[in-house]
Length: 460
Image 1 (cartoon, rainbow, N blue to C red):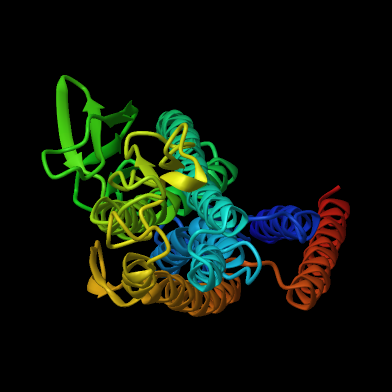
Image 2 (spheres, helix red, strand yellow):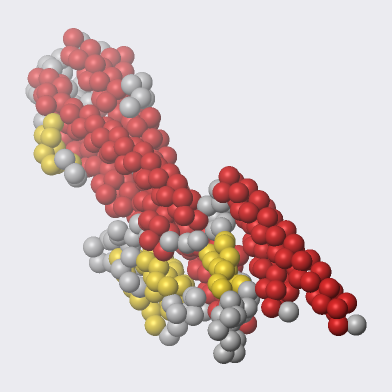
């Protein structure tokens, strides 16, 4: 009987192993699937007989080939990749818009100064004066267009940020739900591997949106927290991440509502897409918006002040050329309504309308310094060039960082797959081995049955 029992246990173990192998092969192309194996253990003999070799083989549990450290690497790489990829589109757009030689603010400034230089040949010429106004208006259009691009990016980031927060909350809730299912499966003795894979895929997607810390719990659940330790998921309890009013220094803020607690935190260094968007808005978009506004302010102030020091064709004080509204997106800088060509104060002497001394002073303003956010005191003609250069440098740095992040992500995936991924050749070998194991045990079973029948025949 021991031969029959041993052979039966071996055949059943081989069947279980073949089932595991077939499951692995079936999921050869399943994203995030963790391969499984079977643990075989020799069954100890019962009783006190010194001649009993044992009671066959036992299959106490399945093995899930997972490495927590490699999973953490995978999630960290997803967070870094998400952080840099989220902002590259915005940086590329700014590079293209600000680097266009035809429609840039620099091209508008050059055209404006060229019109002023042309007017200096004949300061009393109405067409040349009108051309100066037309060139100034073209310059204001460029300022307003650039300001509109920046405003559109702010709107897009706000919308994308809200979408990211919604996705974070959905994924967090799914992780909490899966935690409950995994704990219940473990308590009932059901294999939870598929649920664990599903939960890990959710955590990976969550990590791409915001940096997370993941801690395994004894019951099989996983706790998820933000990088600063603020909890998002603990067991089946889930927090909710929401946008909050900016902090006193203007930094974007978030709140996490967890259980009965509300945590308020600065939305910086968050990791993932959320962290990338917040960093871009705080370190690039806001300073650039302020710099464009400062350029418009400096331009309007310098020219209006100098024009007021001159005289129009009728001998009256020169009127302001530019009108400034820093609260407006589409009309940051405009031409003073009702301004005519003869109102321009090109002369420095009320009695000499043909004098061009004040006009030459206007042309010289190109070399005047203005205070620009993120640049300090720079010449008006150089300010925009430096802003374009800064954007180009920032974009190149982010592209390089994104390239590194993509490489690290690919390495992390390959490293994870080396432990958890299904190897087709290995499973093919397992399939043959377990098939042979099954056939061998059935041969033992057949032999034992023959011996048993022979013994019964002798006893009849």
